[in-house]
Image (cartoon, rainbow, N blue to C red; front, side, top):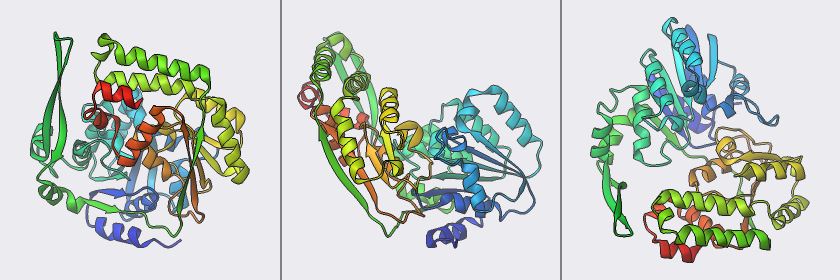
Length: 407
């Protein structure tokens, strides 16, 4: 298969540099570009490919591992290739030290981090360890569709992985140079207060682009097919709804619980949503969807183990995926239909999930079913997803009384 226009542009942009970032939107074929770029480097002894474990060793038989995707495009022309989970880097001292020794004793190494947003936390052990590995390697590449999912600070560790000289500043200097802050103080019961600073804007962005621009290639996805959306509404059963409203009253009226600040909202919504996640009316809506579209060509996205187990039992031909473990890095062009069984507040997960099947190689229109229950939380999540804001951003703007009315 010939390279696409954007893939050709990526190769032309990156070929002159030893380090670089492919910030190509999901589905644009960055794996193919990565293979081509690596194979332009002669006499490689080792390629190390770091990615989320779900990409390297998928648990679902319908999903192929990244190694097969790489082989599809001819494979890496190196003496040896190692695939390792980014989670393993952080969790296993033994495997990290083995990899460290391997890289340290190998002459010519190319290091790739796929889904590089997974190293956005500069304090995380996995990030610190990958930064150590990067110091020993001259040829490096990071791949991601959305390089920023939280705020501009996500960029700092990714650029430092490529080369600290790109930004040439500390983390605090980066924040002070490019971010504007607002401090919010909340008081509880007249005797305790809690203050937190939030990023409310950015500045000097032209300067940032001047630092990183030559190392980064970005592109959007352009396909000659459509994304078509449908909504189905369901009724939550009485027992689950009564518990939903009991939780709402308990959490939002208890002053001690409110001292947990933003964490209380996450805990509240998780418990409330979990209570009705398997209400019978939801399954009826999905069955009606499968009367129109083939179950065996469908993905069902869930949020809870309970939802996943029940959907697998009732719809055994469908591919059931969790947002966190199934919405990133997977190529599922053979499954053009998607059901959002549980809603999620994480807009980044929603965006990623849509590009599991809407990507290069897809020849059919992609259809998506959004299930909505008859409680306020369902509408609130939809509103925030439409506005493309996450939970923490939302909570900056709303009082407890407003939240009680919404839910």
